Image (cartoon, rainbow, N blue to C red; front, top):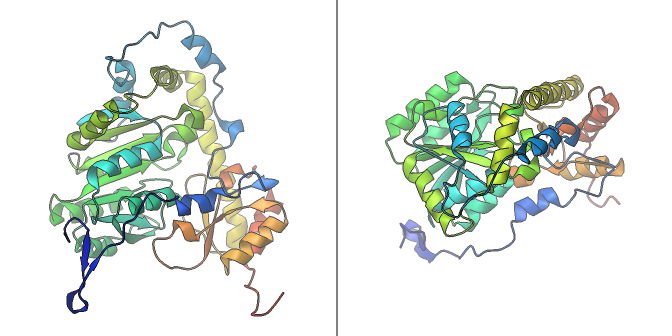
Length: 389
């Protein structure tokens, strides 16, 4: 019963029946999505700038000239798309499939590799819906801190002493911190995992894809048979494409594909054909590259203002920025009073830590120094004194 997580043995304190997790509302996810639509300038969303997304018109026009008649029995992934995806995969994937976005991929992989009572390692902080998902699966989550190069090796070693079954990580443009894992750190982490033995499945969420300015480093380079890599195209090519590729460890990816046969079956082959067109269309490729460079410029501009104001910030990649504040609530209220939305930091945290907020700096037009200064001012706000009205 302890092995499956039904009971919790606490030594001399006794043995306790674990409370069922139930299928309640994803509380962390709700907290970071309750603000959108209420602010003149909403930096809480974690979404790409629509003006930097590729134009779908030429893709749709080209698609209309093709015959896309398909059967329930057709392969779940368009053969031409699979070939293209494998060509750009960070390691030789044993199996590959396509799902309905990165979070769908995380959900389906977690359903395969995580059982009630399993211990699972994640980054601290990390993506709130992942924490909600693992909580609903009944997992015990262990957080490992990040530094500028990725997961802290000493903390990963300590986490592995708890015999986890899976490790979930974001190799680049980490949400919320903006950290991209270095090759040097990846090799250190891979060596630790190899020495620990074959028990841990590695799940990588490359949610930003081609708009990340940092190079992609995957642990699958050293551990291909234990790594499942998820690559999303929502932030780079359009959220409504709802597509992500899942490739790597054959046993896990095959289980994901087989389970989908009893549900949606496959992700729309029309959308797959659109993605294939976009991955090979020169103008679209140039547009995505330009977006990547623009996001990097916007991030650098805001970081310069915050660093001058001595506001602690982390990372150097992606559309989000993780900034430390004196008081989370005071910072959010100060920004809200100016019509600016930001995401609270608490839902991203595995354990208690310094107060932070997440800001989607990818939505701040280059050169908007007034907005950057407003963020710096909010970071310095003290919590109200007891009894203050």
